[in-house]
Amino acid sequence: MSFFEGTDFWTLAVIAGLTGVTIVTRSFFFFSSEEWTLPDWAQRGLQYAPIAAMAAVVLPEILMQEGEILHNWMDARWMGAAVGAAVYFWRHNVLLTIVAGMAAYLPLHLLLGW
Amino acid sequence: MFFKAENYRHPAFIEAVRDLAPQAPGVAAWGLMTGVSMVNSGLSVVEAIAMTLFVYAGSSQLAALPLIVAGAPAWVILATGFCVNLRFMVFSLHLRKYLMHLPRLERMVHGYLTADISYVLFTRRFAVPSEDPADQLTQAASLAGNTFTMWTSWVVASFAGIFLANMIPASWGLGFAGTLCLVGILCSLASTRMRIFAAGVAAATAIVAYHLPLKLNIVMAIGIAVVLSMSLERFQKTREGQAA
Image (tube, rainbow over all chains, first blue to last red; front, side):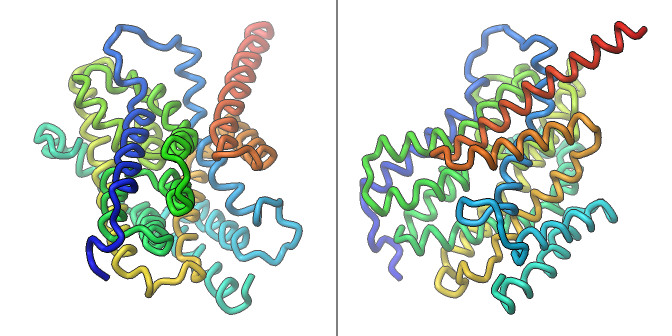
């Protein structure tokens, strides 16, 4: 595996462009220095954005398979996630959530192929 | 930004590093598998390293890979990355009030480094942006410690994935640790009935709208959940007002 093997200018240019996309989207509302603030109700509404973002990313990951909602309960991901969530509410520790969830998920996934 | 002394010398910096450490293995697992996918889909080592260091956005990297391999037109790849990243614009709107006291370049660097987990845990730690200069410094230092931890675990793990790509098959499912990390964070946020309502609306929307292209279901779910929760909150307020 040589370091530069297969590196081409076009791909590097696309990577530069994607870097620009990250900068623009992540700091979109930081660019302008104009004095304006969101109305209070909007700032309060945005407090729901973090949990909404987490739920929108996570639940399709664990309740869907290949774009369909699970129609078979034998799926290692929702079981691992359920164990992880239970451990979270028990111990309030994300690291334990990850460890317990993986301990439930990996045997089902690797041994049973779920 | 973690390379600024007033941030990394501040006690809030190390406190944030400690708060974020339990999440680091989840982010690392996800970074590892992203490193593996980049190399397996045919990027060269240099390209994969450049993508890790500069693009620094897992979901847009993964969305771009098949398009790069297929030789899709550059504007299609950039437009895809943009749509996948739309949620970050919502995050920057939320964080604006926290960072506007800083010079433009500084707040843009903060923004560039603030990915999903950093945003969620920062706003969980500081529910309200401060008006007081000392507290503003604390919040900026905390965000710096937070993004420093996430950046380090993501980049180190991605590099490991890039160099060990042919030793770690995706079929092992190690990336699931990243999902579990988000499950833990989701549970930690589910502290009020209104928030659980918001999570339910977002999850249902994201699942129903799953077939929208370019992960637009995510930003749509966030938008609908925020608007509905806000309306419900106001409706409850008016009812309480009438009752009183």
